[in-house]
Length: 399
Image 1: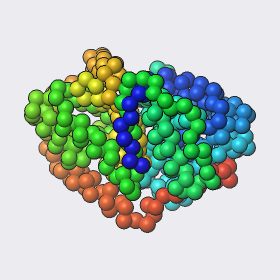
Image 2: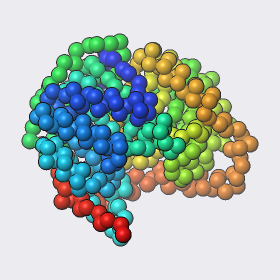
Image 3: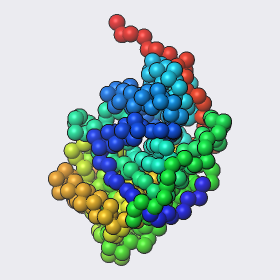
Image 4: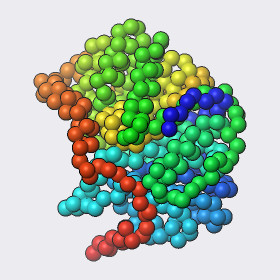
């Protein structure tokens, strides 16, 4: 799947679950022929219930529905939830299902981390947002700050092709229509879909980031949840700052996983020395994967800038050239910096450096080579299987 830039698209930025979920659920309710969903996590909570009800309404109209979840992220979805959907005719698939060992999930790597929705081949959504309460920061303190994109136009055909290819490659479906809805030009945005897999497209997303960083003239603004980039990305960010580009990073200051901030903060001193500005978002856990360059380039999607996303997971990002969208993202992230972030100073970055420096050295070099060693195990040959209620026995009631 070697996707190219396509002109004539329309983009709409969706901030957090409170904007994303109503849009997606309404699109599902309006579906006429086909719904394709890929996600890392579905929780059986208020958001998961909203998704289920929208899918059941579409299934009652005999819309073809394919839902693919990850075997690690959605390991605990209830049998009742699955049964309601499959009994209604929804086709559910699980990526890389594996048994637990001593109560622990073993499918830690090569996850299906993409978040894609395609409805009738006419509208698509790409995001970093899972289906759970923890993507509602307007309601919950630990709700995550995150971003999605609704798109229409020629690029939707590529998003649909990425979703159908996963199903067909794993022989999860017998066949799907070649094309459904109208994907004629509807806007001014140029877009290119990039996916990361473990076959032919191992570095596609990273390569697009590298190109944007190397060619940036005035500014780079990156908000990323799990920031521990490859040596190439780290080096190019420093090079951009040295040649006068204003490089700004927004990273986790209230992490959902403390180790994520520990790894990121081990890089702070080295980045600050070259003039890179670093802010930590403090209001909620940051789960976003969004960036802009200069006045027209932007990306939104599922890929973090860490070894799992860049070297092991299945990921999907949209890369967009649209001055209006770039300006909207810049205004939003600038407001985030001004109202909800703490600027990292050299003094703060150097605090505890005596133990962070060796940690950074060991961690950086270990994680650079970890994806290769993880691929040696035959246990990391993912498959796609039907998800049925039998595979998710009901939990015993607590007494």
